[in-house]
Length: 151
Image 1 (cartoon, rainbow, N blue to C red):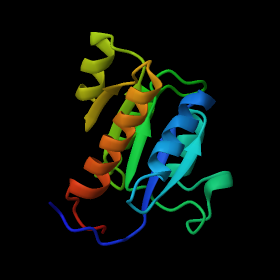
Image 2: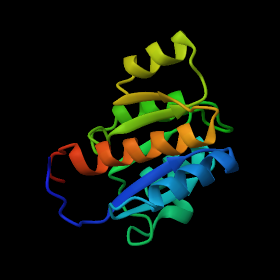
Image 3: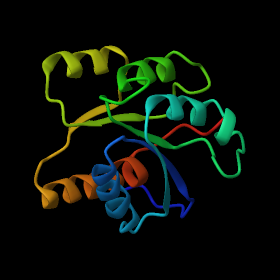
């Protein structure tokens, strides 16, 4: 097991469904791991956040995320396009991107991995299962997973 450094981990949650976002935020906040969720509601806001544009230009208020949780079906810019941009931008490509979606369509799964998603998770319909998934996800990506140092 990797020893926790106690360093605050920043998570960018890209989710247009407010009830799903609330479950993720609550579940991750209840973890014993220090984390802060930055929630945006569509792909365009996600790109603005990642590229420090507009309302997200302040790096203190909107730091580079250590993890992106990305829904696929969103307004303005869909999740697959956001994923593609992240994984083709040298300054962003090392940020782990976990697809967190209700789609279990083979085409979405395959395309996500073709675009270099780090993981693909289908949201369970059951609240307790969803909460448990978020707990496991947080433990894995924020505690066990070893990342390269930031440049």
